[in-house]
Length: 252
Ligand SMILES: Nc1ncnc2c1ncn2[C@@H]1O[C@H](COP(=O)(O)OP(=O)(O)O)[C@@H](O)[C@H]1O
Ligand SMILES: [Mg+2]
Image 1 (cartoon, rainbow, N blue to C red):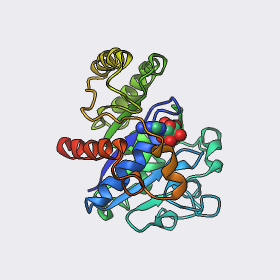
Image 2: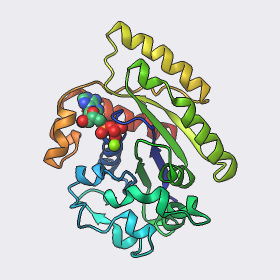
Image 3: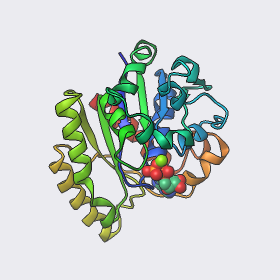
């Protein structure tokens, strides 16, 4: 059975896609069989892995019943990706049938035996797509940036998490908060860390030990179609994401 991990935060720009792609690549480098799934209509995750997202069969086509999940898989050199594209932005209105919360879980059932890990990237919202990710997952990771405003609003994630846990998926748990673009040396960062620890305890979880430092190479690597580990192996974020992958593996 694959372990399913979702990156979630209804705020944009907190490092969901960056961290999803780093975890996918980091696990693949450790010889695990990994599938990444993009549930964000912006389609960034597919782009990161070099998928032609406008023309490839996407998760939208699968949810619509036009293609099988296997047909939507892009087979990369190191890992597999199911991309998304802008068509998915109508999901809230289009997928309104009974059981719509189970669309992803149902199609993933066929793939569990093929992978060690399935990593899901989500849109910056708490909608039917996010709920589908939560219903299909074992674990959530909440990336956050060290800005006071970005730390607010976590109560909405908590509400969604608790509702999904109660009604759809009792085994769902939060692995932790991942601080990204985090420079531990500033005074603000220390205040942010304390605040994140409070938020984590409200969610019954922890702030992960590994924190991701900022560096421009993170923004550059997607355009080159290679992971941060290949693009800038000696950079701070590459080292930080490596310890993040190891920390997760030690917790699972
Ligand atoms: N550690 C980091 N250092 C510098 N820039 C980063 C870092 N992590 C993410 N970024 C940049 O911040 C922006 C938002 O990150 P992204 O992963 O797309 O967030 P989200 O998916 O939550 O919207 C991107 O341009 C990304 O390259
Ligand atoms: Mg994103």
